Length: 252
Image: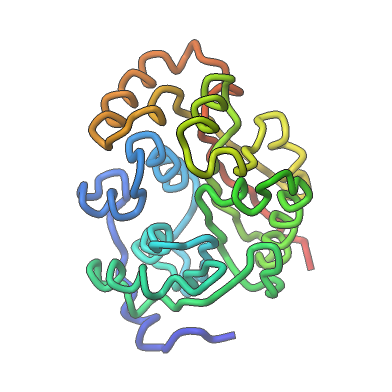
């Protein structure tokens, strides 16, 4: 299925690694708690080959379109999606960075994506807890199953998600975060089972103190504290997991 004009495909530019991108671009991609969440970008860029021509990506839960911007800057044509079309919020951001010609906008329910063997890359950040909110645990697996079906053989899911983390995190979220009580935070022990149908899955965790910052400056400072104490904090107590799940090339 051809979503994009041949002119748009030809005009896709090869870009430098996000690792050395300017701060404005990084902020527009990550949006919040930039130092900790941007670890996912570093990881993806080190482990994903973006050099192929005509790659097609799908961002789920796109909202402002930050991860669509990331894929577009790495040579992909992209469908930027959310439960309702994110075009109104995301279009100006993509225009600002000169990638509008690579991106289309669609309303897509992540629990019913409706594509099979279509995408080279599916990407999301912090959506599972909302989808499976209010104890709808079965929607974790339903979402991942839908993503799996939508990927081409050999396709990759790039994921970053909030973890349940520690008792302190759970207490603060319920007390001070407006959606904290209904959000269904993924547990560290659930990760392997959730992605078990993929041929390979690799992931890392990061962050403990950073999420408690009330401003981006505070979160930036606390992320430095995170870097110091990270070696002694158990993986299951950190609040961000990010990784790559790869579908077998032999899938039909």
